Image (tube, rainbow, N blue to C red; front, side, top):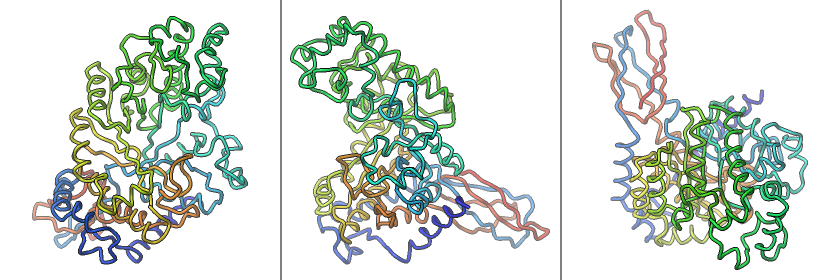
Length: 516
């Protein structure tokens, strides 16, 4: 019954698409002047034509089917049923929206709009207590619990559901899964405080106390980046000598996290962000091969932690699981870091890149025609990242509505449409993942109106813009006649197809076909 309800909700969203919205692709079509003339000069017909040509070249392929038993007058129906391109979103709000109606509509998006889900594995909340990872659902993860919480944002596990129910849901819907992240240096959002509490000897804790400003105790160390001048002047090697037990056990604990998760899920989750946002440490020369400690800009991390994490992940995950590196720093340094890791025999299958328009003013500035996320800017970072010759996953994207009024929502939708079209056209791009699907469901500090649905799960124009691209413009559905030898040729978007025709006996025949 629940799956039926999800399917009906998905269909109702898709059916209403064309009746409600159409989105301008040029200044001439923008009759309400939602965007400025300067914006349309940037996204001009020449740019749009290049995007169309690149989509045709990079996202489509030629197909050929041979029928051996077909009626002479049969018409062959060629229906694309799925994409091989990843259209994803994080699924951090699983069962947390406060009403069953909202939760069902949210879940209905996975399989109808999104074919991939990014699952939260942030260490700080995933393993609140040592050796007690939150794989299995407890009462405080249930829909019943969340439906009765007055202030969900104040709950420590808001946006951090237990992982097993999410994995099982995705498996039931045939949704590709991406784990995020295994290793990240961030003190506030990722590394648990007990790393310091449990891994240091009493003598080491006393020494660390003297290196921390303001807080005065190691209990809050991982939330702090405020250190004494003595700490700032110490080298990584000196820290390693001062905290030898901590150095050893920190490395062991980071490795254990990767091993435990890999052993638990094996190949069930299709890809992982093995290391998140480490390019800045590489850029500053902070990760030294062979060292025990990295004096990261985040705080103390294991030495050469990105290389070490990939080395461990390669050993413990099945070969078919894809290992990603991920970053917001899209400078040449990120490309150089990735190339260096590849040269050191790290298994890196995909480069992740991020794009967050968190500030509503940024989207107003884009609409006004300012030089933000322009085609030239995007082609620039794409060219840099492509030097690594890896598929690129636009792993986290945020496009904020600059206002909650009709015009603000339309601006969000038009920016979404044009950016998705350009990203989809890039040769090495393999997927795009929207971050916060629902308004007011982001992390503290993230914008409250960056979703494609309102907080009470009403679809916004940006939803319809995406749905039109993914399920209409970028899906191939056509009819054709076989030649005298039974061959049917066509050109379509890459993915899975259902081929239907009538055989000589008058029966309907169906076969699956994969276009790559």
